[in-house]
Image 1 (cartoon, helix red, strand yellow):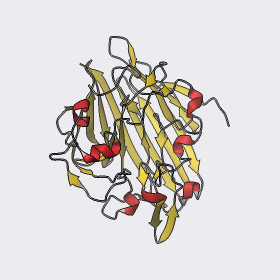
Image 2: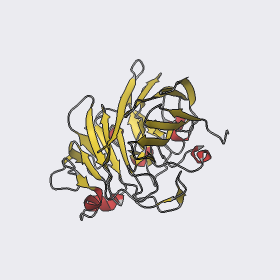
Image 3: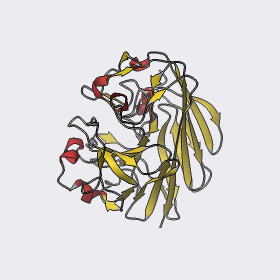
Image 4: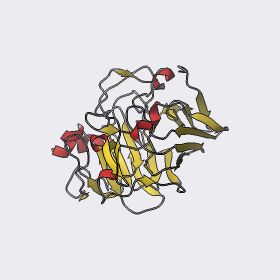
Length: 331
């Protein structure tokens, strides 16, 4: 295996990013808003760490995003089993998901790159040969991430990017003083193992009511069994509306801000409870608890096991397409 993934730099203005072929991962996202360049995503210090899976930092995850209860489901009457890698459950496609693969470069330019991956029939227990593609496009203030996939047999599929954001610089502390706003009037409660119970509940009166900007530290301080399950936020929020719209806005104490726009139905908000200081970031500093917040655009977790959740089946002749846009600025 090549222990030196290729690094691709995109962007010619105040905003640029570095994408690695390992996991089609975003390792750096640098914004210069007039006060010097600041890297606003978490990344490993050594690019070789991404080979074979880098803990999802900035990675493209799939075939199926988020959790699958017991790693088991049924598709068109046929049992499907994905190897567990999160206790008894499968997470982000299993132990050798798309984040752990080397993607090939299809197209490359100053502000655009396209990477592709072929996932064979039976990969991680899922049927069908899947051909996946991710495009990254950069302007002076936006990054657009577009996922495509096709299959030759019915399969379950969901792709997203798993970047962690800290808008005042990676490794320089936590995100507790960032404010977060999410356009979501409901959420999917979880069991203790973070698998959805199958219900969709209103956010009113819960820590998940982020329809107005709230300091993340204040949200995490609320007494809540749901927050205890995830050691903080690790929940699927059901976005209002449909089509391309603004799903979330994150603002740092400095005034730097990020908007997440998407055409997906939901957003996983994860405040990084697992970071414990053992991972060294790209700037040479350790990542402690809540070092970054992941804002993962997605379908519903464990959707194959809940008929009331949005369908996650991709069939031959269909094209899975998902668009996420990160808009960044300051002041």
